[in-house]
Length: 114
Length: 115
Image 1 (tube, rainbow over the protein chains, first blue to last red):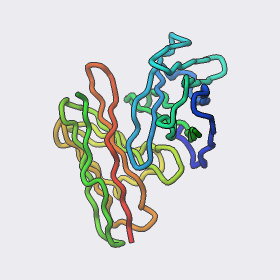
Image 2 (cartoon, each protein chain N blue to C red):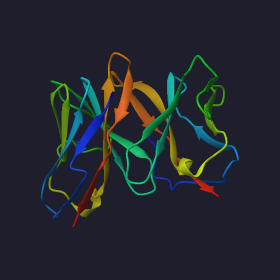
Image 3 (cartoon, one colour):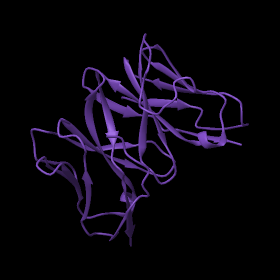
Image 4 (cartoon, each protein chain N blue to C red):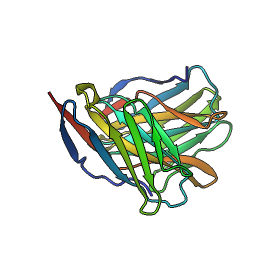
């Protein structure tokens, strides 16, 4: 369903460590999932996506894992850098009212410390 | 490629006035565009789906008479906030779907402040 007004949780990591950001989605019929990065005052930026017929997808320094059984998605960032500091959102593609639309999760703020 | 722009990037207006925000897909055609609203430290909430040549589809709880959407061409959708009030102050973000690849690209957002 729609994301409700929640304050963002924060994940603090040391530069060089790996980060894992988690997300629970709502609709078991959703067929496509995307992770976005949002920096302050900017629009969301695509990071990586995964379709529901997969359980893992890797990109450059990022990996997305999908567990459909528990409707859970995670984003792993390897060797986290200060430039990775931002808010991260997962989004699920939902077909509703005759249209495909992206519904965003609550988001997690990633703070990378040198 | 696949760039979406918004104009203006920032607008301040007086309570009771109307504000128009434009969303353009610069290098692709978009039959479908989306409007989101984001309050500070919160997620993006879908307001409406904008369809070229037809009426927009609004999400539950979004007033269609207050948030007027016009998708006049395959590269332009506009959101007009009518009779704006301070509680309408927010970050408005549009996105455009590139149909061939079923990808959705986001604009940079418009910060609306209603005094």
